[in-house]
Length: 147
Image (cartoon, rainbow, N blue to C red; front, side, top):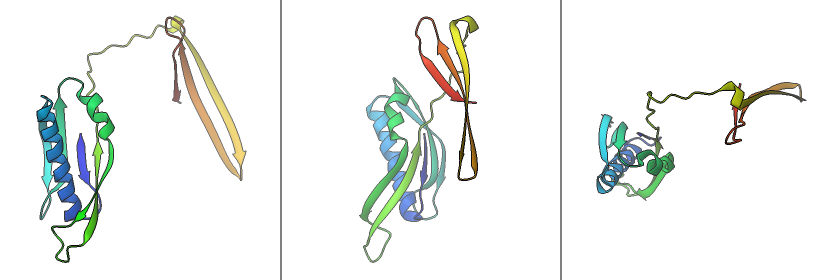
């Protein structure tokens, strides 16, 4: 997981550090191990970025929904006028891929098709190309990828 503050300086950096602390405590309560791989502190308060690795039962599955931009609206402790501030921080969750996994695709169990679609609109040429792989036996599942 990577946490980065949005625009807003100290206020957003503080919000990013609050998120970091929240995720570390969440992992501790769930019995997971969370190790901070990299953390860059902010000038006044908070963090500029942090990278955390979570290990435990279904860690990625539980955290995948946290990817996105998180918003906090509060009376700023850093503003002398005590105005309301909106702070943003982005969270990006990436699974760790095991390189030892081998995937063997037998060509005789798959149907490969390639599709090209041309469109002309308003003097703009657009080309869409895709490769479709259909697994004939046993699942009949379809996977389409842009070429």
